[in-house]
Image 1: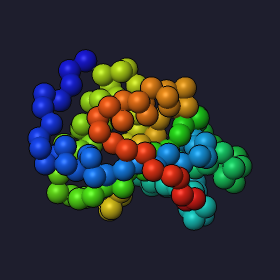
Image 2 (image 1 turned 180 degrees about the horizontal axis):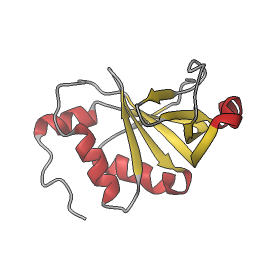
Image 3 (image 1 turned 60 degrees about the vertical axis):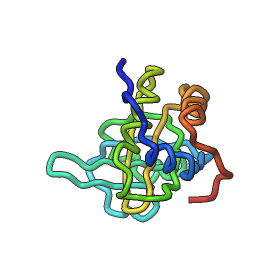
Image 4 (image 1 turned 30 degrees about the horizontal axis):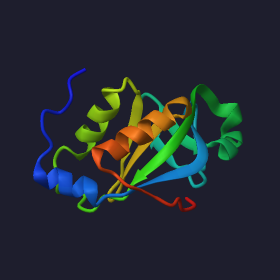
Length: 143
């Protein structure tokens, strides 16, 4: 699996100054018929073809009757990026590092943060890969 050829000094600086937080809850990714109340969930996307919900194990019960498909269980990692929108290759470096270890991931970007969903069974290997890339873990905060 090819990796990024080289990480620029600017990207290395961004990685070194962008800690990550491992959130303690278990997460699942659901395809649902509908999600009339997005508030309790981590992320809800409405597309023409489907509605996808990323939610905690606890909040999953709110959608039980609407679940069409499910992928479970994931751990959620939050990147507290020091310079959002200003460092090309940030997500590519993360994805490349984890792909080199044959880890499948889901990446989500919001306006000021990037998020990584990693299967529970891959967590130890994934955290090691992130630390080798230069990220530092910080204490979790409640979502």
